[in-house]
Image (cartoon, rainbow, N blue to C red; front, side, top):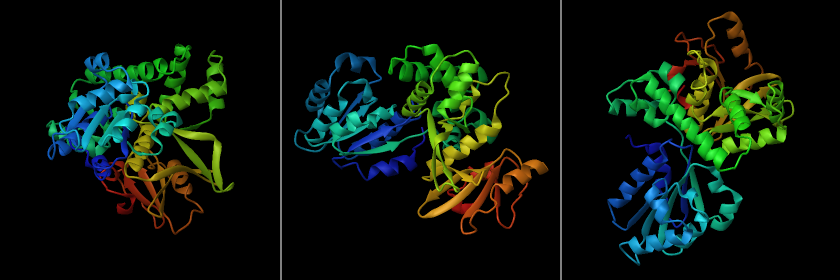
Length: 398
């Protein structure tokens, strides 16, 4: 497995810190691998390391309480007085895990935690940690990472393939399309059923799955809870907007989707009534498509979003006086306006996508990303193909 240095570099400065390191992200995005790679770096200088994997039945059968965690660590640390490095993988399976983490850091332990639910960072736990933590979100592979792993496996994965099947790390290991789809469907079922329906005790499981299916196949679109509830009612499912919003929040808490704010130039503020929803990985859209009719247009925009947040940009949707610009991306005091389209080869699409930038400040860079190989750049707008964009380091390099 490749070393995901972009993430590990952010954690490395905290190896010896008494701050609790919380590594989060959707299931199977590679958190445990990153935790293992961090542990290997630390093990090179000390053997005072304790690791517990709470996805392991043997571990959860023996360790059921926060006291069990503390007792196990104290019994297995090689140095009673020296700094002990403690790794707790998928620790949210244990009630009151935050009490164990707090107790261990007081006993000269550097604690690392992974989990696939943002409730790890909810007020009920962060209050217990008293602000003595730092958090790091991990995502599925971006294209450069996927290519690096594919090279390691002596394979090649095209941009077109990535547009459909995304970047969950293990997907690169499957050569047979049916095997890949089976893996992704099983992963989806685990996330939706185990991580959400069971955890939140959703009684109307069938209705939740219908709403989740609608949201995940409708990525890169603006929705409100009310509009989704209205759509569900038109399909015979009686559901309130409040319930829909609660379920959207559950999907976000499991890192399945991101809710992106919209910023209005006219109102000069964020629009809170509706947001744009993006999947953590486009495969969650593609496995819901019939007859290989994949939604490449919205998947392309979703992929650009995932790339931007991976590269550290703060992202919002920009309402340019009624014309939507897909992304206003900000980082290090620099602002970029980014528009995404599958193609602008036709005049209507060209006029629409370039016209979205009308009136935008000339001081900020304007970028159009499409699947076209022809360069459509103008004096005001830089055009770049998706394939080239996926390989640059930052928007400043476009």
